[in-house]
Length: 100
Ligand code: SF4
Image (cartoon, rainbow, N blue to C red; front, top):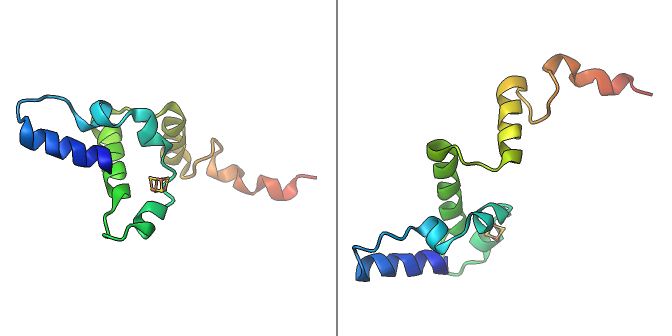
């Protein structure tokens, strides 16, 4: 949240500065470290929603740059192909019930 505020101030004070919020102020490691637990949203006394910023930048990376972490790409491929995050076809879902 502080990095976002600082970047907004930078845009106001230095409009020609081409530094971006992502990579310039917030690293990709920081961005993907968030577990989306929502604690920061719940605890904020000013009703600021830091998670919304995180999710919007993540959405930009995935939708516009196809730059999701490899583990997420695997999961999204599985959802697309198997309608579940696991790498097993729908027809095999009930097999665990017959294992000894
Ligand atoms: S939702 Fe907020 S408190 Fe939870 S991990 Fe992400 S940034 Fe941290």
